[in-house]
Length: 319
Image (cartoon, rainbow, N blue to C red; front, top):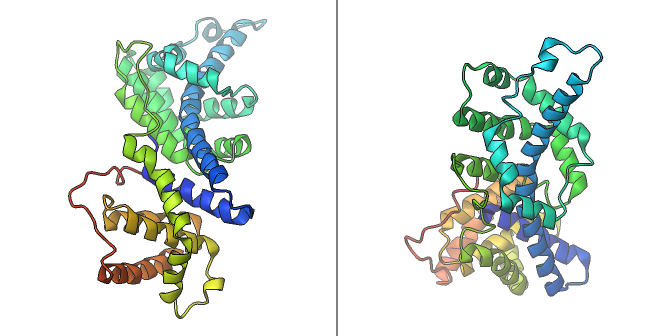
């Protein structure tokens, strides 16, 4: 499920493109936002397929070794534990995964060096060596090694990030979160699950589905008003010299504070400060925190903040 932090980042990127593009076409930008979110969801399936590709690579190595002119005993009688991994077999048989991969034409075929690199890194790890040499095989061990593969090998592979950046401009900013989605799926798999076992949906609920578009529209609609309140609360700053992305972060945060009563103030503060740390300058988070604090006090005085208490939210499930 795409988290609200990812949705906030996508909204900010779309608003940035909306103003930088020059044509100010809201309908076009909304379409771009929806496509960007869809592509992040595609990455979830694409990364699940990656596990299958690495197992297939291992199987091909075994078959090639058997064809040597002078195969060794190990070549002729290889350890098949990894290529027979039961969790990967469930991935392979999952109809939802296969259909999404086929429908969206997602393929790792043009990236053999990445598959080779991932297998090498995995096969040389202490965890893999222990897995292959364990006295007995088990479904739990199969799950554990695949979880390790995604959490430690895939997540730390610089070549993966380089590859994804060339494949889609919409992927690089959400890779780590999408890997966490894959890990969440792995934790849910059990022996006996049928091929039709559902994978994670794009959104947790209808509210999350509507969140991105509502945030985008609300920020654009009150852009001039939000820009004015930012200017009034940055008296010691020339607003023209403030980083443009910082202004957009502030505008979007104000929109969320004012127009989303179900989202706690603390959540909004934390989310946009974290976004600033990762996407703006080194001092931006302190600047944004200070300006937002002033603006919240003003909005409270004007009775423009009306938060609903005790509304459950998944905003803390972003890491």
